[in-house]
Image (cartoon, rainbow, N blue to C red; front, side, top):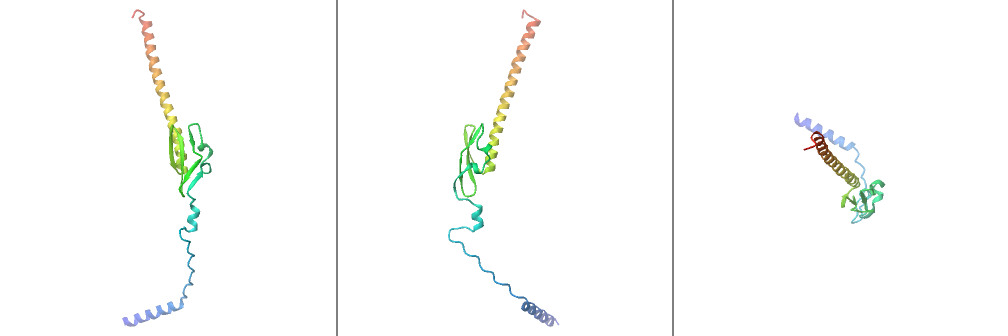
Length: 145
């Protein structure tokens, strides 16, 4: 009985295979010339070399009161490397987003430094005036002292 059931299954499988048409052969893609990449990769990449930084960065990031971005950036085929001068230093930053962040950091650091100097000056002035007022108050209480 098992043999009979198995032979029926094999016969049915053979009929299904015979009725299913074979898929049409697809042509092979044309081979790219030696030393090149497929087209969609080439579109996503640029030629390595120098590029104008102003094409990739907003005008307010190119120059400001505390910084300057060099007009020419170096492209490695994927990312640009910008040179930002600010705070008496040169910063080499890769990528437009990181360049914008670095410029904002320069202004944030400058703001924090000016705030801490102002606060420190205010505290010193308050302490100095407080001592003078205390001395003047003592003088008024006891002029002979």
